[in-house]
Length: 162
Image: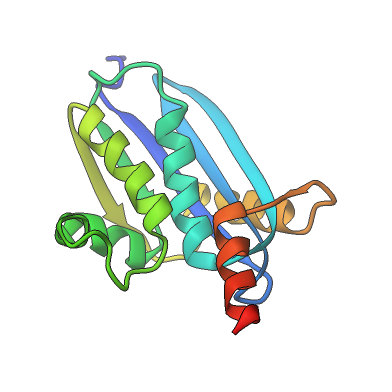
């Protein structure tokens, strides 16, 4: 059996209410080994968690020389990257775009890696890794150890003042 010549990252995000408690789930796979990541937040959005799942997966990688294949059920994430929209948003300083903090974090990672491909998969359709990531994300959102999505909650506080 030949060793796998790419890293796979499977991702999903969830939010109970939008905004509301949320979480992400990520699976990394390389050469038959897997590692899972998840975390919940007390107030966030589904799109933020979809993007966070991808970022956490990329940040966990130790090598930037191995090609990466990312699988997500988020059209928001997949299309923004595969269609190159984020590069236009970046040029315009993310004016009027949501989640600029996370997109900027992603762009730093995108520039670091040799090759990234991203694929959309239909969610809740029996894809084993997507289903597992969904379980991780939902369990994280429902856990008692919810972190604070500082950027998002600070925006919400500003809205409440006006």
